[in-house]
Structure formats: C-alpha cells, structure tokens
Length: 103
Image (tube, rainbow, N blue to C red; front, side, top):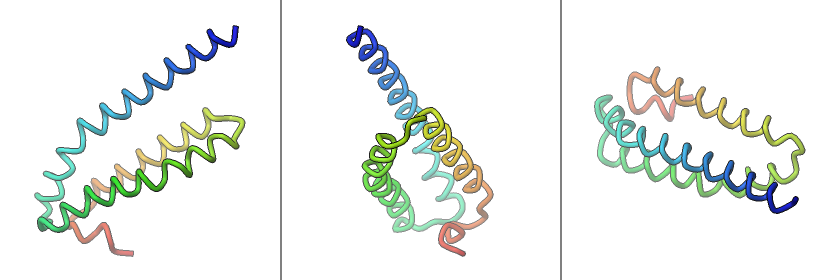
C-alpha cells in the first residue's frame, strides 16, 4: 500500500517539476528581451539572470524545510504560485530597468 502511495506522490512531483521547468524555460528568453527593450545594459541583463538563479538556489532549501514542517502542503504550493504570479505581473508594469531596484 505504501508503495502505491509513494508512486503516486512521485508522479505528482515529476509533473509539477516538469510544468515549472517548462514555464520557466518558455518565459526566460523573453524576460531578457523585455528588459533589453526597456533599455537595460549588458551588466543589468547578466545580473537579472544571475540573481534569479541565486535566489532559486538560496530559497529552495528554505522552502523545502518549511514544506516539511507544514501539514497542509497544498496551501504552501498555492501561496508560492500566487506570490510568483503577482511578482511577474508587477514586473510587467515597469517602465525602466532601474525600476527593479527602486523603493
């Protein structure tokens, strides 16, 4: 019985990981073009991609730890997706590349 449950959970994890990687892979090339069209320099473009990878690397263990401690993981996944969606919507409102660093 535990084996069937484990297989189901692994399938769900694989589908989720595929969907996340596919969506990032489809949008990442356009993020650079969008920021370049706003007038970003090569340095700013490099920092955009570097910082997104750094944030992912740093935050994944923290999210993993939190997911292990939270009983209702569905809400955690929903909150993460909602936060990412809101952040992407806010980025589309920028008029200049320096808008990312303004407070």
